[in-house]
Image (tube, rainbow over the protein chains, first blue to last red):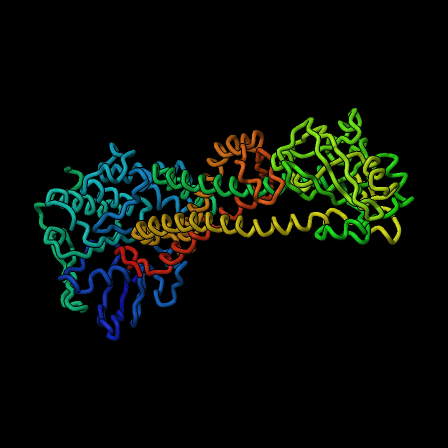
Length: 241
Length: 393
């Protein structure tokens, strides 16, 4: 029980669209344990991102019970949710969402600034994170000077720099070519193994799916299957790169 | 999160934004300098006119004969009385000066023109009129005229002109007077249609010995009781008309001030709204990284406020030398400004008081902060999931 990072019970999420209500999630039950490398898989509009947002405390369920890192989302204030995100949850987005006026170093440093970590500790952690995504040579670059793959690696470094318990990645390979996609997926799998960080993806990309150890399929807001996989053996590990 | 961190992040964002920051700062600094500059001109107009009137016409206050109505020249003949004995010590010590006003007529170029003959002691130093030049004159009836009067009548220094008036008994009398000096003044009310002559001469010509219509007090002299026939008017009363005029002009000045400020705020608001809405995904990202709504609002509001502070500093860099130069050297006023009804002089010296500078700075800073706060609050109130998608409500 202590290994449970996420526990959803009968979670509904409804959106009001004009006079009508659209049910994005229907009676979702899900448990994710520490150290998992799993993905929410399904077509567009199946509720993947909605579920990811709820797990990331960016949104709240309309009904049901959601526990994330031992916090019930129903009673969480905005401030408590923000604190939870800043300490324990990392995000990776399809469009990278790097802060455009900051350098690579500053982007990765930002979550540590929010946590009030002292400068020497910040420096050590930022360098370690950037080393793990192989970007030590781009410290002073701005996001506009990076390729898509490099930008996503910065986003990964930013998400793991504070050693979170959970990293949520929303379509992380959607804007990347095949080579870069495999590259960042290997890095994430390596980080998962090295730091035991739980990764939860939202994707319909077969490349991502091939790396997952657990595939949760969603259709029309419902979980239709939940499979434990054996990731393809032909994927190289990050240490091989 | 510590407030210092928010400040550091705001500074980092501004530095990172590079040219955009400096364009905003430059435009906003221009607003500071323009508003302060414009208001300084109005302040200069007011102060200059007030000082000139005090120096040339009003002194530190005036006793008026109770029958005197300055707007009714017909009262001038009845508004004369014995110079009160209570004021004699002040007059003898140069702290007060009697003024006698007699309506008259001159005939420049063969045309009749009404004038006021004004008699003032030649040794008085209360009003900055060159009366002393009359004391040194060899002429029987030397007079001073202002440059406007000279221009209107075609009179020049050294000219002679016939003056007609009615004496104490109502009998018309006439003499030829000698234009001893033509003086320049910005105060039209001591210039146009006026002939200044020694008080004793005027009293003698009109048979009004020891009589006056007004008694002008020097500055900072406490008024004394001069009897029922004489009413003391302080500067507040005497400057009432000017201040009313200033107030009327202040409305247009205020309109300009509000217009400039509104245009500036509109530009700033527009820039801030564009900037903040353009950065809505960034706001969503900041929330995803763990910033609270309040912190996001603080950050963006502080960025706006720092814009304002940088603009104030940058504006000071070029505004202080520029406005300082104008305040010291002034600028030449065109001829037509004489028709403004205020004693403006030939050069205008803008005046930038601490209240104007500090008040405008605080006002613009507060306004910039508010127009930064409003769009930031609107976006921060949205759900992070929507801002992350770049949605705008």
